[in-house]
Image (cartoon, rainbow over all chains, first blue to last red; front, side):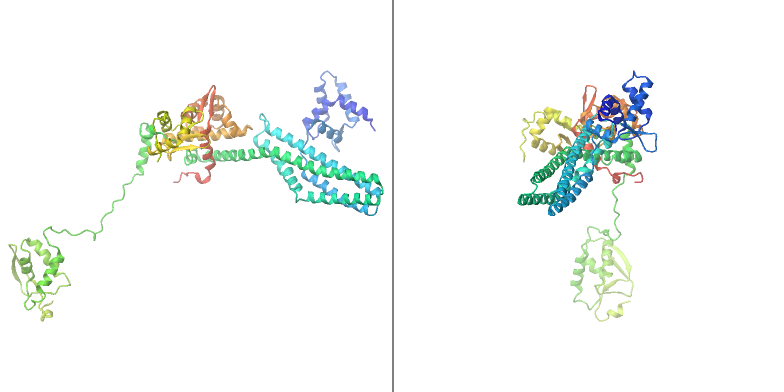
Length: 424
Length: 181
């Protein structure tokens, strides 16, 4: 057993070295050489012999202990915890730590209630003490975690931090996901935490009532009352601490989310640009600017090139060629409308059908102003019209129309009775 | 129908000249910005009638919207876009908050050289080979477009840069114009 005072003296003497080891190696192991180097750094004037002696002193007093089956060393866990406390180098605990303690508290609450039932006051006192201990532990964890979060926030906010954005915020994200969120869920008014405390509080209150009623072991009542107050306080402190921690972390988390989005997108786009080329990737999205001066000039060579390139794709509007049927036949302006001629023809030959009338002479009489070819055009139209009843003569006849002589087998207006005979 | 009293629009000429050249009027251009802010309806109606599309961005700047750029302006715009995205990446890589650093930090020649060195491959495509090329081809043009202002030993970016950040968020795989078409 090493006297506490001797240990404290060594600690005071070598605090610088221990702090250095603690900060440099965190919780990891180190070699004997590292310890000696640390001592040398702190006390450059010391001789090698002295350094060797001091190292042995640290080892002998179990401040530094060898790792099992290894020549490496580590700081005694108890000393390390103490240093953590002194240096405020707190690491965020897990939400599970607290929830385990709370579960234990619930178990102890049940045992306490049972002890009360069988009026075993020793047991009652014992459980009350253990519960008190657990409550203190939980309170300590809350305070510890709040400090740790404060550290995280400060680190993340430090502008000159060398770490990358990703690393810097990693702690924030972890703190949020692994501590704040599960804890908030736990202390939620409908959560387990709350229900558990209600039960414990009811159990303790019942015990106090019973003690009051029976008038036995009055000191125990005071202890139970204290425990009850402490549990209530713990509940309150926990909620307060969580709210504070969440408030500290929230803005960072929001900032990170936004930054992450933009940074990630920038990295992604640059990746695409590297792969596909600047123009291919950015042309579609680049903001456009008005530039009247340039818009109306075609000055530089590349404008001309662009213009020529544009010409390659140039196409006339497609010209629609007319269909054969769409073209109206040429008609001399003198020719009367065929329909009029037809009606006139019908009117004329409706009754007088005893004798065949030559069509051409009808046309010559009706339209004396027409040229010969124009008259023949009408003639041709009339004979090919299926609506009209006409017949062709058997003999060749010479006819003079419009000062022109024709010899043909003329068509005549048909004669009703021997229509069939004349048709060929 | 908005009644426009041309006598009220004291800076019309200056504003028109700036905007038609693609300039973004932001809060740093105090006089013009205030004037636009006060008579926004009149200006909007007037410019609309002239065939311009006066845009007001709530992040603090005015500009003429446009659907397409001339080939030259398009090239400049792509160079600016690339520079800004590289800046964001650079700030993030050096552990800074990119959005804060983008508007708070002075972009000096040293930074430009670093950017060009790191991303030589990309800037080569835009015929930018050195920090001073970047200064001349991108930063001075950003000043001319109202995207940045010149300060003692470099340039500070201004609010209209948000147009590029908006554009950044729009990029995705589908935006890629393949060589095959």
